[in-house]
Image 1 (tube, rainbow over the protein chains, first blue to last red):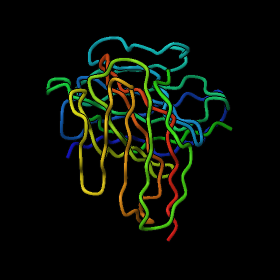
Image 2 (cartoon, each protein chain N blue to C red):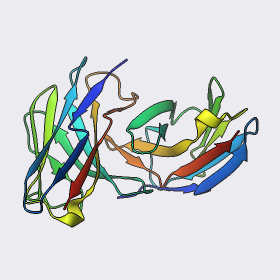
Image 3 (cartoon, chains in turn purple, cyan):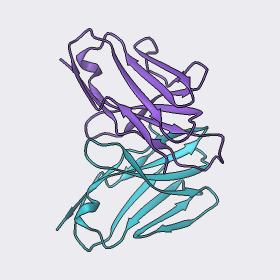
Image 4 (cartoon, rainbow over the protein chains, first blue to last red):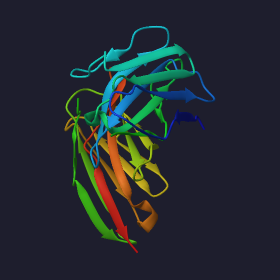
Length: 118
Length: 109
């Protein structure tokens, strides 16, 4: 089945550091990738939709300058948390989808990145 | 933005019992999907039901969809301890997936 690889799985860094998270679709071309954030014991909140070759669409309340998204190829999207602070600590999950296929298809999720800012 | 609510928020049952989770949503959808998440991990897709379908089965899973009530249910029959996880419904509309609040299921051996 379709596989999405997310890296790194865990990051611990100091406040003020910028952190980059990669999301790769391994065996299909992902025309669209999604970035979610999840707080402990809570649901997934959609942060942004990333379309290959164009600017990401951010959900209301998500700071685009804080969370930079790049989707330069059909198999790779990156999320950079700029100048991270403790309140940015969270579990970030990406997912990928091939809209070239029929619309009624599941999304494929990475295993997530646990970000801890000290 | 959060699309919908799930209930119960938490459910504890014994192995062999059935588990039912309910999901309500607010807007029109193309399909509704159920996912499972083990603690600290990514999501695993369980089942997708299209807006023109009313019921779907996959192994021990049974999903219903009532678009007039904007609700869905997931039934896990003959539960096992390995079914312990969080379960989320997600509505697919406007080319993005929006998740419900989730149900934490604990199955005791």
